[in-house]
Length: 435
Ligand SMILES: [Zn+2]
Picture 1 (cartoon, rainbow, N blue to C red):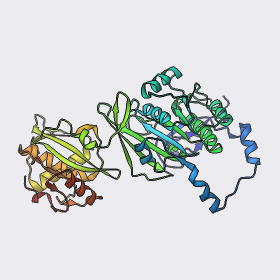
Picture 2: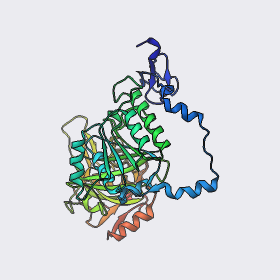
Picture 3: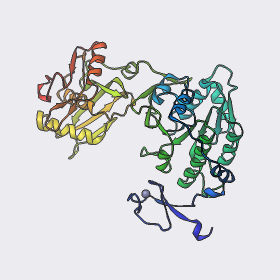
Picture 4: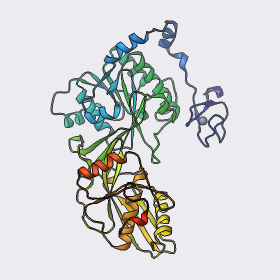
């Protein structure tokens, strides 16, 4: 390879540089420059033809009139809910999630439920494996799914160009490659170049494209950060592999809302839509046990009841442990500090463990009060009344602060029959809660 064909490519912003440096000169992130080959755009025969053709123009009226036929339903209610209008023609979607979380299962179910003709690119598995999964997930005929057995992006694009279908699924972007880039599949520049070609083809032929992207251990989508900027919508499928619940969220959505969450349950016949997630989350709950507290959080625009458990025990260690599962450790340490300062709760020499049941990962600060009450309940060995539920954010002064959608949560708590509701509406600080 000649010296001039090597550039350094920033994983974060996607800029290319002739020289390596520890910090990206453009976005100032550290350690993001990797060796790559420059993208050979001009070598594509077709792109030359396209650039010579004048672009089409539309009046606003024409554009609005054509909008109706631009989206179609996926046939899966929870997916449509998250996407907003359904799938948009020519839209490019990135479905991210940890390996084994159910991305391929969800997309196979989607391909089955759409019923119109779909390309499913098997680059990670062989067609027989995909076919076995399709057969397992569908009782009916699935003649609408056309499996493409290649990892070469250039041939995938040719297939789409020759005979466009109503949806193309690429499983996954880390395992496909284009001949225009000499690096191995999965390398940042390879992902960028492959995605770029696929996106261009999708837009040219108004064919929606769903790309699967794996997530690394630290929770980022593997490959260049710019992949997220290149696509129209970024969907994230998350959950705990040891548990049944799976959440589908939009991280970015050019076509609809970003605050909706689809809730699924993993079963032997694929992902099933969940209408009452509370029932799954509270299954097997021990009532009237010290250390258990029910709290309400918002998942998208839906209130969800979850159980928070705490265990406070004497510590044999000079520095007691604070261990959190399902909430951030910083949050737990902060809440322990608030309890020590404002309630004089004697947990300074105790280990504090907190767990959110059902494998959920809670970021909603409205769960603060629930975490605090679970810890108090365990420390005092006193159960909360069986009919109680709470929500509210804790301030550093021990005050209970208002959270978004409080009315919705109150209404839900009343509907579910909880009589003791601790919330910012009823209590203004921790001291006023009798426990
Ligand atoms: Zn950069």
